[in-house]
Image 1: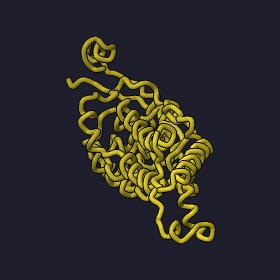
Image 2: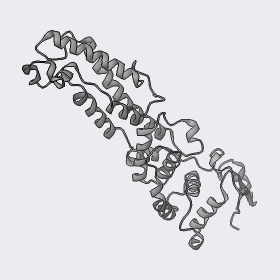
Image 3: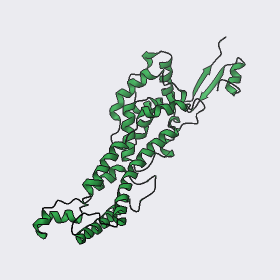
Image 4: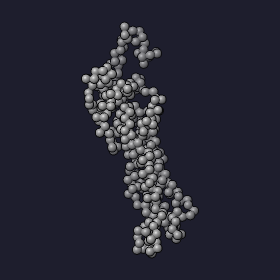
Amino acid sequence: MFTNQFKEATVLNNGQPLDLSLPDDDHDALLIILNVIHGHLKRVPRQITFEMLIKVAVLVDKYQFHEVMEWGTDMWTEDLKFTVPKVFTDDVIPWLCISWVFKRSTEFFNVTRVFQYQSSSGLKVGQTMGYPFPDYLINAINKGRENSLAGIIDTFKGLIEKYQGSEDTVCSHEDKDQAFRCDAMTLGMLTKRAKSIGIWPPPNPPYDGLSFIKLEDQIREMELDTLCEQAYNQRDLYNYRLRSRVPTCGIKKVSVDPCIIDLELKHHGLNLRDLTDQARKVPGPGLDQRANPLLANTKRPWVLRHRLPV
């Protein structure tokens, strides 16, 4: 903006004072930043509101003031970290902005985990308007959510296809008729249970309307006992030999529950350090960033006066 053939550069090069209007910048947030930059630390508040911290974060990223503002942002974020949401609320996206701009790895991991674990849709343009989120960050968050949901869907799909396509029975009961009935019952039960929670037939990404936490709760409450497991529990209907044989064809404890636990650990929460290298490769938005709706409601337009030294 202040170099090459930009209008502002031309004015400065001609030795004229430059009034640069900044109508999209919040007056109070910018004043806090300028007081820090110019060392007027007595004028810098030791505590600010959550809403003001969001505005400061947006401006810090816009003007690339990360390093010089580190003193204040660490203090303010530490003071407000107890407000980091543990459930999915409207504060998740603002905290994602704060933790991303100020490189708060713990808060970043926790807030991305909440989003990936509990959101019923991916991060959309309307949710990110005005926030300095690069595309690769949005993609990483959405990919983690989709991968965890795909893991659940693929588990049920694999089990259903296994029972549909096996020439031999999956159940290993020595009575072939009993094994066949067990497989048939298990297949029907899997299909109906999966359909009841919206994952059969298998949906396509981005899985809008599905959340991992809701599916997890529904699956944990599911009754998925095979015929052999039911027979083992209803001992009065079968002879002692059958009762004494522990079923090995159970699917919930063997296949479903371990998958849920593994997916919950693997695909929820992003490591800030893993994204740092990508962040360094992407230039910041700079002064020519488009109008920001987060900063639109300002008390008065801010004018930056810049004069070349004589």
